[in-house]
Image (tube, rainbow, N blue to C red; front, side):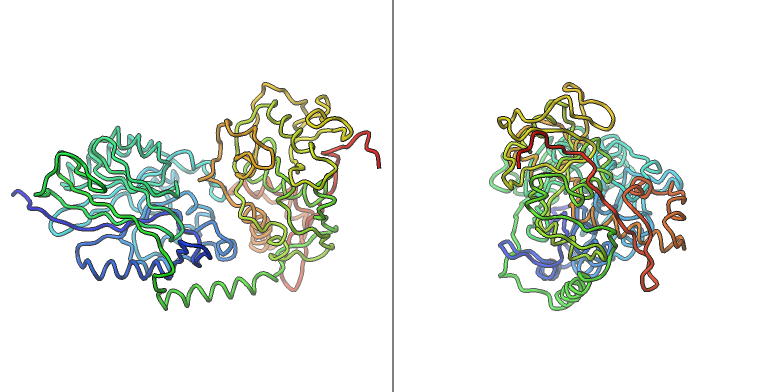
Length: 546
């Protein structure tokens, strides 16, 4: 029997991290977004879907404390029908990730990543979903790109089996359309736009792609397939009015109206911003207020110890090697496993000496107040030399471009002309002298990749970890203390010697962080890691006149 014209609406959004609103428009916020979702469902009963394209549980300042739990109640209030997983949804150990997914009141799809130990979909999520919309069957799959698997640090990636998104997309679309007799096939994805375009171009049976990962609002037609992305952080969303077998057929797409698949589908797209004009949902706002208040209390909690004073003074950290600078870039390099890490010293804002003793969350926040992301690029030895030259070019001024370095050491003469100060024979990466033509992996801030502070030599470098897969440096720093603290508690140890002898094969992250930890401190029945960073001659000044 030929099906008649049927219409329904999809509200789509992706990549949300902050439950609290922002100060500038569009302010977003989960309480306002819940109001939007509830109104959307009320105005379109039995003919509306809310779809989410991944990245929910991390990263944010609250996720450092609550490990994604702060997102559960606000997102459950949004009446989501289906979601696909994003890379940052796997920023925790597998047990925590599975618990987070289970606490959601909607299904998560992940069609092309398997757990090799069980041969099930990773984290026990669903392979696909089918929803009946007024008599037509809409089939959904969830697809990820391979690029973000290597950014997962809390889960052993050796247990992950990845299937190419094109081959999986073809298989899933055929199954949904032919075997399950779906009238419309939708791929919910968490991939970069170039990969979404490849998917649309190579898989004819996919009608609509609802994507995330790019944090942009865009509508595009490729191979008669609609690709839609809808912003980020509860600040934007899209509504797609879909008509199956429309009667008002047009030959050409006009404005935000698209006719797809030989006029099988008509899609009218509207995009919106979440502004202060939207009222907050009272129940969700109470939840948000609770977590914000808890965060304020958490700021003064002890998360670790230092056996030495930590120097973050501008006059020191912007002109010479310091122990805090060394510790900071060592933590970053260990997290991303790069050959080298170079960060501009202007990143460190606390301008003080932290005395030896307790380390609190607020101390690290004060030192690192900016939401900087750490990316990794493929960088030639020549570009590394150029970066070092830029870093010392303004010495002895207290310029923020002065470098903090890990994995590399060098000497410079501040009396020479700028960009001729670094002694090339003194540059070593690890134990080997730098080679100008060799390609190294380099961790830097996204800020630096954009050419800021004179670091304009990286913009043609290829990414290993790009902006969309990057972690905030504050989360990486706090994560060192929290993850090892939790591990020390669960293993029932009382000394660093016992701790260092443990086998952490189940999580590579602990092994590579061990050299940054000095000892285990016992304090009021809790165990904390203690650090002892030193100045070790990574940056040497020669012919310095005082």
